[in-house]
Image (cartoon, rainbow, N blue to C red; front, top):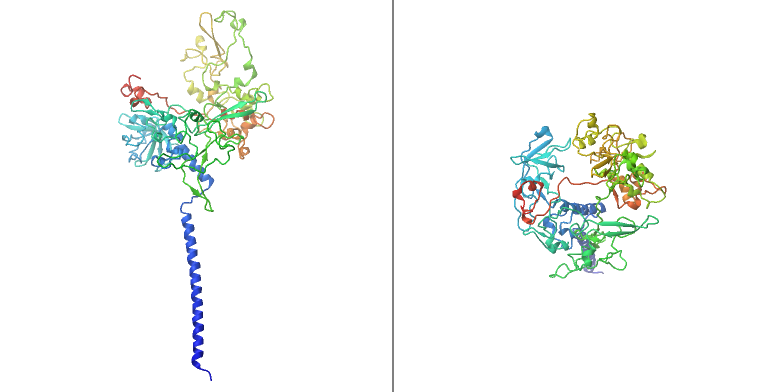
Length: 638
């Protein structure tokens, strides 16, 4: 007979075993849950410092830093960054600005009735002296605001800019009204007023006594973080004051006309400073792994090699780091703009660096503003071009007693007399006289030239052909149209003491008595010397350019049409408008301007402000045109 108590014990043991298994199962589940939470937490922690690394966004951020710099309170946070010193374009132009936010003021009451709404006026904001460690004020007198650019930071007119054009006797600033459709600014809006363009002393000037220091030769020195005289010196050149600018000088093969070498001075690097003995972060702005400072001795980029260099980096002779324009020659160096370390999706850290190629487009031949119709024909260049006795009707002799002389054309009336012929010189291949010059001005059977009016062919002229357009009339309002006509009482008197040469075709010589003799000046087309002169073309910013449909007036080349030739090696170059390239085709489906892409432009701009010099006493230098009119504000020894 079995004992019942033993059976009961066997069941209890089974239950205990099952309970233990269940417990181990719960432990396993808990482990999985906890490790999953820990994994997710670790990923969240890892992503705290990660950024959206879309190339467009990163490049936009970099471009904005190069255009307008970084806030002063952030400039010194990264000692390896070139932006700790104001090398940005706006600082180079304006030196600084007056911000209503920084000065804790807002726009005052706005009067919108001035000149029937063409102007508006508001009280001049107060000017506070600079605090220690800050830039000196860019405006030291309310009158210095005149001529400066006003930009609204908020309100209905946010983002709109205009120019301050006057100041009233009671301290009211007067500005041009915004374009049609833009709301008026209102009292309480925030604003910024740029500094006076090109009115500073540049780096290295100690304005306290007018003396100089060697800081100008140390573009990365912390002492340049607050340039006492302003970074907006009164010129631009590829030197130590303009570190953002680069120079590209092509060297040609005289036989083939092809570019064999481009001598480059990169942006943010000056080999001459290194060759003169300079070294370290104050001179070389490229990451080199040099110490940040004597106190730490830590390199700023210890693992940096430049990635694509062969044989190392030579700071004097190159080669440089990056080929930005795609011509097969390196032209830029890597620089640190101070952006934080970032992480890839797999957790690897990297430091964003940038290679900048910033080239000044001024100082080049302008295919819209330079050149006149007369220069596009071969008979303009007959050498020697002589005036014989028949021309002088036997009445005059030249100063040397001869009866003939070779005289150059042009009287320097304006920019249009600058000849574009060098762009079509014999260095370009396979033509005797450049038909492409005529194409550029007048167009061909398929494309309009810069003077538009496709149907007019070579008869297309500046403005509306056959008419004295308003631009020319306003520019030459003191000219009657026929300098010689007053002697016959056929024209009114005008303000010219010598005959003008609006077409750039005149010649001047002296007779034996030293008196001037004028040829082809003052009257060319019947009694009208003003119609179709080269200054009738409208090159204002609001004028349409690169218009694809036939026009009845000028059709200047757009920046995009020039860009196709300026950056021919980029993958999207063939998607840009091709009118300029087609008109200057050399017969091999390449523009004759290709080899001269470092020498031409479609746009040149000058700021409407005078150049102001430095007085012997730097504290009392002229900061504005108004200072030149008030002797009490300018050093009298100047």
